[in-house]
Image 1 (cartoon, rainbow, N blue to C red):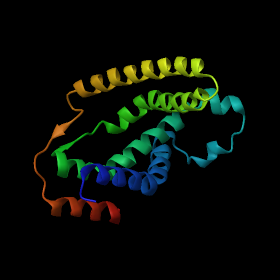
Image 2 (cartoon, rainbow, N blue to C red):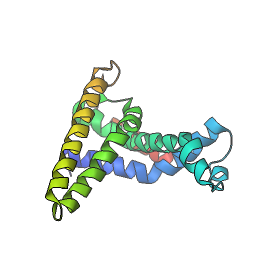
Image 3 (cartoon, rainbow, N blue to C red):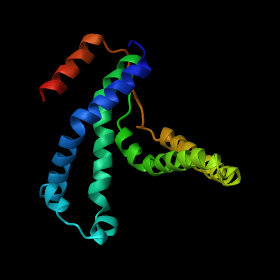
Image 4 (cartoon, one colour):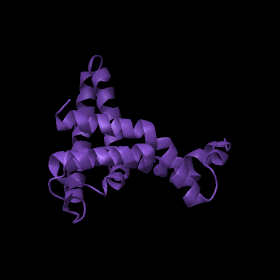
Length: 167
């Protein structure tokens, strides 16, 4: 319970569960000028696949932002730093992570029946992982990707959570 990794995981997941939908609906309405559910009534496949990636990108951004909102104080307390661009990096890195996970799980299943195909999938996953590492290195070079704050008292962290809980 007192290790940073567990606290970060717990805070991120809790933030996603508690804030993601509300944050997404709020941002969507502010950006697009009408509630999210009016677009949900549209059922044509072309509409879903081609013409409207914006709302789903916003949903992905909202997921990253809601996880960051509750995990930022843990980062600040343990590592004396905050990462304000985390939500943007989530949107950019998501395609790589989702492909790595999907192809990796497919590789595990295929390896029982077709080991040579699994080896090819392993090469693809390795290439995608290399590209993701390159992308993360670029993220790290952005000047405001990480802001060093310094030591923060526990009382201030608790006050932050109380304010988020009241909001």
